[in-house]
Image (cartoon, rainbow, N blue to C red; front, side):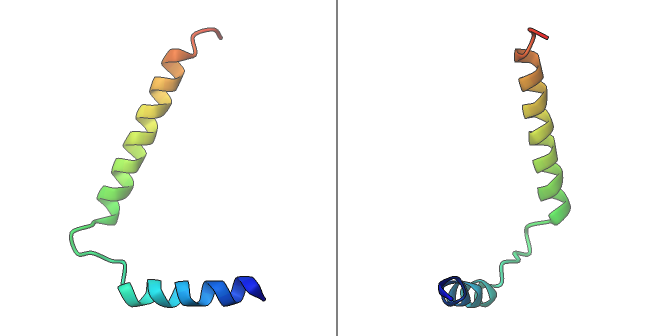
Length: 51
C-alpha cells in the first residue's frame, strides 16, 4: 500500500521528536482555543444582522 509506506516514516519522525513541551499546558492551550472560537462566533453573529 502506498499510504502505509508513506505514513510509516512520518509516524517514526513524530514519535522521535516527543511533541510534549513542559511549558505547554493542555488546559491553557484548550482554554485559549475555546476563547478564540467563542470570540469568532460572537463576531460572526454581530455581522449577520439580516435574520
